Image (cartoon, rainbow over all chains, first blue to last red; front, side):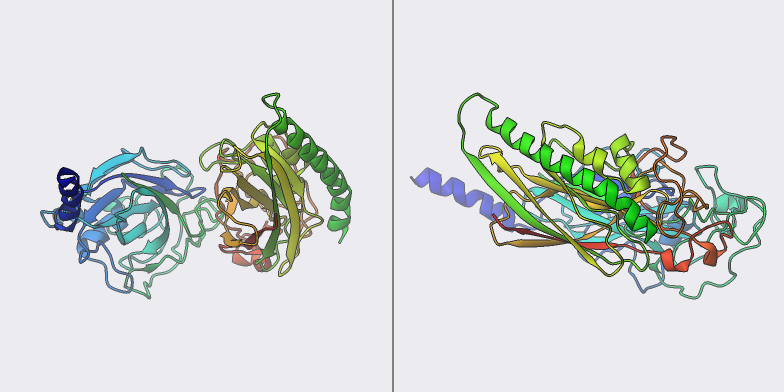
Amino acid sequence: MKTKFLLSILPLSLASAMAFSQSIDVQVTNLTHGMHFTPVLVSAHDSNTHLFISGQAATAALQTMAEGGNTAPLIAASAATVVNTDNIAAGLLAPSASSPVTAIETGVNTHLSIVAMMLPTNDGFIGLDGWKIPTAAGTYTILLNSYDAGTEVNDEIVDTINGGAEDGIPLAPGMDAGTGASGVTDMETNQTVHIHRGNTGDTSLTAGISDVDSRIHRWLNPVAKVVVTVK
Amino acid sequence: MKYLNRKAGTLAIAILSASLLSACGGSSSNNDDGNKTDTDTMSYDITVTNLTNNQPLSPLAAQLHSSEYSAWKVGTAASENLEMLAEEGDNSALLNAQSPYVYSAVSGVGAIGPGVGGMLSIKADINSEMSSDIKLTLISMLVNTNDAFIGKTGVDLSNLAVGETVKFTLPTYDSGTEANSELAGTIPGPADGGEGFNMARDDVDYVARHPGVVGVDRGYSESVLNSTHGFDSPTAVLTITRTE
């Protein structure tokens, strides 16, 4: 009787301690018809950490990810306790494709964020900001919207200068974009992180205002599905 | 209106064969092990409200099934039955397809205009051992598109008690079987009156979320669609009430 009592109280005392690592599986699916995602970063962190905040200006590290797909500065800017699992799809995540189911030990961390750039866009990205990881075992589905980092004009010109990281769209991985566009706009009205208004596009592969194809490189939210299994 | 009349003929056939199927499915599940087993009757009233501006919905298709069945999967090629529904709004092949996992299948009556709700009832007699695994699939085409459909597959109704109601907003999928060309002659709905089903697959050949339509007002001069045919997500509301 006494032994049983002790055993039952033990897990409770562990649960109340701060450092209670969880084992979770994460899988990300690209729901879109014609947009690629750059390497997907999954970050487990505390409740005060954010890779981005809607309505606030992007950090330089987020800007680098959103404009060129490079997640290294976001990882470099992380606190030591943060568990970053980068590039879970081993490269680009193609339209309608799913990443492998990726096992993550959360360590001391309680919240999950996910980002990846959308191609072809100027600075569009998929975003999950600080989702609280449930403590109850089970399978949870989260649908992600597309955001605009607010750091680059959405001119929709494919431009590989500097890898496209500073000006223009670096690449259309489907190799179905055009060239010779004059540019959709030269202004970025909202310079904070906001819901992406979508590509404008046009149907000319050699001229027009946009290098992206309005029939192919468009999307409606949500753009990604995340399945988290808490074990 | 021409479109609606033309569809009515197909629809009558679809309803007839669907009711035959459900009778058939009911008896075979009773006789699986040769013994008399208890059956549970599950009946549901289903309402779909069209939230779009100018996209009539083709007659609803509903199926009750186990978790082994799904009508589509993102990232996987559409079945030809799904292609027929997504390109032409014709649900008869999908509803008539035999599957040991589908208990019953029913078509709604007629197209559902923008701002309008459509209803159907669906019922299945299920071996009581199987009634802890009952799913619903609901699907319909946005007829002023090349191959867009709305719906949900695998909605879990196992824990829905008699008298309870659940509500979902519905997303829009692209069957990936026909390019979103928006050209004259390729869209079956009233915006065009063009071709419906065509076996050729000239698109990505996987199911994904629909990217939306462009239309002539957004600079695509060859499109037969205009700004009135645009849509965002969600495109419909699905309400399910268990009645028995």
